[in-house]
Amino acid sequence: MREPRGERKRRANGEESRRRILDAAAEVAGVRGYDGTSIALVSEKCGLPASSIYWHFKNKDDLLAAVIERSFDIWADALTLPGEDTDPALDRVTALAGQVAKTLLDSPDFLRLGLMLTLERRPEEPSARRMFLQVRDTARARLAAVLATLAPGADRDSIELVTTYAIAAADGLFIAKEIGGDSVDLMPLFDLHARALHDAITRLTTETP
Amino acid sequence: MREPRGERKRRANGEESRRRILDAAAEVAGVRGYDGTSIALVSEKCGLPASSIYWHFKNKDDLLAAVIERSFDIWADALTLPGEDTDPALDRVTALAGQVAKTLLDSPDFLRLGLMLTLERRPEEPSARRMFLQVRDTARARLAAVLATLAPGADRDSIELVTTYAIAAADGLFIAKEIGGDSVDLMPLFDLHARALHDAITRLTTETP
DNA sequence: CGCTTAACGTAATGAGCGTTACAGTTGTAG
DNA sequence: CTACAACTGTAACGCTCATTACGTTAAGCG
Image (cartoon, rainbow over all chains, first blue to last red; front, side, top):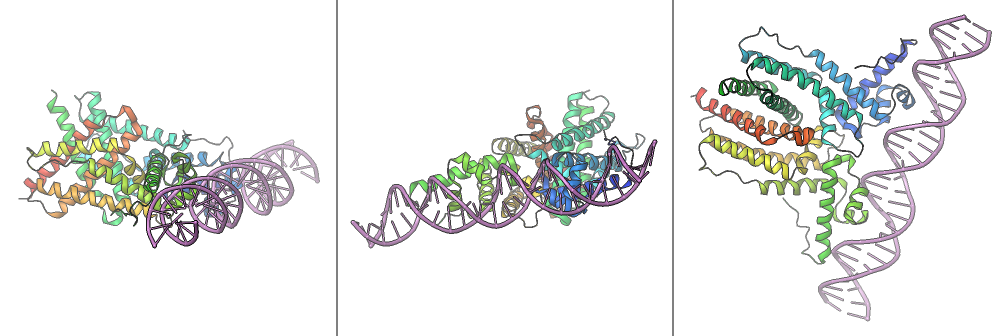
């Protein structure tokens, strides 16, 4: 998925600069959104001229797509899925929800920027948006797999439904945190969410024998 | 809340123009977001010159705040809260969730634009954002009141927690619909949500006697 | 040394932006 | 009729934007 940029570090500064640009762009884009992220701002924040940004990235769209990709990778790496031996099932769901809550608090850039991008509809869809939808889909597939193991007998459609709900509520809780700031404690909310998911899954296995 | 603009229709065209501007701005802003909504685009879409827009509204920020306010009013008017006589409680929550789902499908402008605004953090917070947070808070208060009647014995903090969760999941489901489009059917998702809320409320009244 | 090339620096381009100045138009009041 | 206020139309302002052209520097390699 990651592009190794062909070259193998001829000049040490290149890779370093690329990282600095991505850092700056992530910081700005996470706060100001797609339009609000100007090349001038990123340039100022990373100390490199605009031309260097354009040397490392095709254009602004390409830069922001790379930001999302990297930020998602960082987030996904920080997320340690609970092992299959954890029991009972409620503990497993709660542990997973807690993990998601914690990692979202630590590296929220890709989700914040990604959600902004999904809500907008430009005439030409930015590849940054496509990138977000793509990584989001892999996360979704992983979650569906976990939920499927918790409800062995359930049909595929029901699993998909619960998965959609699980992700949606997580998105919403993330936004609630963005709005409420310190007055919102994510942990009990994600506990509530885990309960809801557990109940829904249990219903899947008991109501459709 | 609404500003009556002082004058009482001296010239018929004025009110009509104002409405046309708001319609156009809502259409554009719902799709393109805050930055993406240019005065030139709104002007083109409503057939009035930019100067007319600036005659009716102080500036772009003022215009978008008015868009959110009006769109919220339309949404809130369409929302008929289920009467207190509806029973059992699950039916009441389900009815409410269904109402929210339906009205969000019909008039999604204020929520889409509002969510975009909440996710961004500019140096100077637009009054459009403040307006959204304000109307959102009134909606929140209303929902909390409804939930409180369903769980008479519950303490205030628990009600607040469930309310936050309820709104968050609704936001997330709205976004899921934006992403998935026709492949996402909101109704079963909001049913699932209603179940989750009902379970949470029931737990509030039984677990803390 | 000299050639190639990755990377940075300077400066400019053209387009679009929000906003305003200002002159016209038209209905209403005195 | 005149005066005035509510609007509309035209044209420009200054600014920021993404992007690029182009010259400079320095490391790797023969």
